[in-house]
Amino acid sequence: MYKCYHCGEKVEIQKLERVVCPRCGFRIFYKVRQPVVRKVKAI
Image (cartoon, rainbow, N blue to C red; front, side, top):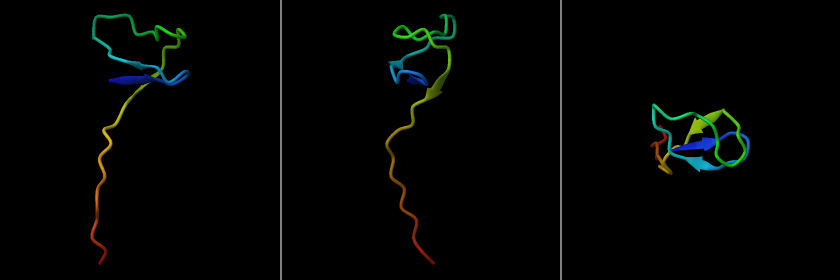
């Protein structure tokens, strides 16, 4: 799952597809991270 840098639309990208946001036409995306909370024990 990727997110458009300009409008925030979530898009699934296949390798053979044209990499363009269907909503705004922007071509820059970033990968959406999973909402994982990590706890680190203090020393």
